[in-house]
Length: 289
Image 1 (tube, one colour):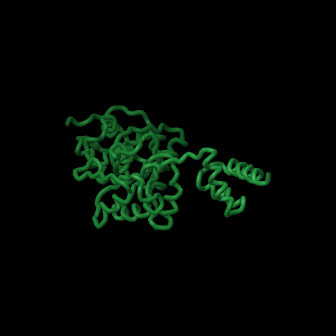
Image 2 (cartoon, one colour; image 1 turned 120 degrees about the horizontal axis):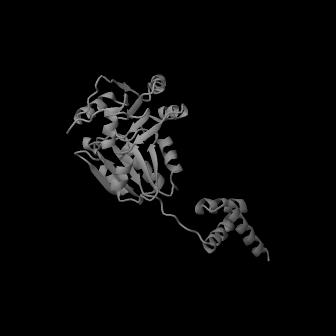
Image 3 (spheres, helix red, strand yellow; image 1 turned 30 degrees about the vertical axis):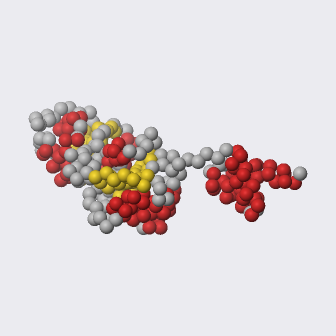
């Protein structure tokens, strides 16, 4: 491959998506920016240097500045100073798209608040790659990032996402994915469809699909390795018409107070409390006559 040549680049911050596995997944525009930027910054300087070597991009006297969550506060002023001097900055996370469960948020915010250009060269993303191969609905999805490590906090977090009307996408450590699936079964039930996608775009790519209990059985006892994305199908939306809700309320009122019956039906149906309360009052009046 012919090495990219440096060309003038407008001053500003350029977020670069880098391959999540296969080095050739990088875009031509990203290569142009890496060849042209005045300042190079990366979450992992070794990974970026290796990527540039693969694609024949010379540093030409430039250094690669390390920027990650642990040193961001001290590095941002240096990068802002470079922008004030009219320089262009290319920033790459270790793999994938910066800011998607990777560093870069505070940097992008500081640069934009200072009035400088912030733009992106889009490309590889484990979230989108996993959705594409999952076989689950992609018209609406929610990226949930990493769930908490502790079981109690993890289950509480999963519960907050139970009724999201879209496919759920999680990143997870291969060491904890078994526990995550166990908790998903507890919170979402055994019959929700799920996917475990591992090592996407790499030599040992693996995509497991099935009910959550089937996934649990399939990975049981396995020592998984590599980057893992876990996806869960949206829950089935149950629509309650007026007649079914009224019947549910009448049954609840036989054994509970008005307040308790309303609360239980609201929780079961997701209907507005005011709607259910008015219906309960109507039932009460009809019983009195």
